[in-house]
Length: 258
Image 1 (cartoon, rainbow, N blue to C red):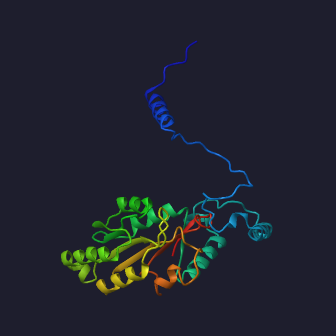
Image 2 (cartoon, rainbow, N blue to C red; image 1 turned 30 degrees about the horizontal axis):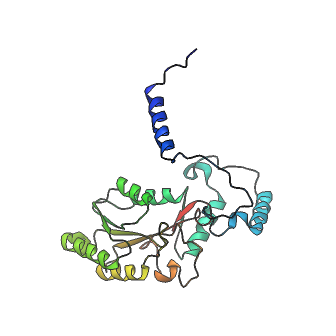
Image 3 (cartoon, helix red, strand yellow; image 1 turned 90 degrees about the vertical axis):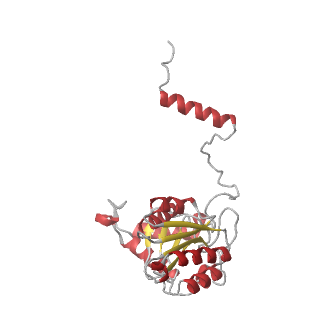
């Protein structure tokens, strides 16, 4: 008996899969041998294979209350002392007043830029900023979204100067400008000129309405204090300078906003 004809959706999916196969771009899940050398994961600090961390986790697990799982969202009845302690520890590490955990770095960026900029505010972003920031900007109520050339402080200054000539509310400090950058860009591995960015923003927006948002997804814990974002952005960094850092790269866990 012949197979029934595929419906429109199945036929479309099969056609697209065949196109991928023809271009050798058909993806499949794989398992890495435990003895292999890791050149591709987000576990930059090798914490997932740390015997010390493993032992500490088991000790905490055996001494913790027997409940497994949150039981619901944190806003309802799923909050825990572990989450609050982690937020506090991460905020302390970054010299911030508070931290807020997200499921992932993508969610943190998308959620922040979708919700925090208010109507009339402006988002200025590095041309190489991550797709998660673009997703947040797409949902944002901000009045304008303006790029500047990648890691180009001079071009950032030109963009900010243009805003000041057009928007009296920004000039008066009554509207905010959010400047979105990454401390370490994952595609090319180049570092943002944070000192120059901070100097330009503070000079052109002296009323404190320039909010530099630094995505540390690929640099948390990788550099000594002399190269860490904390050295380039003097305190107070919060709330004037929000910091989005993930524990996925390099720590292989959720994200936090501090």
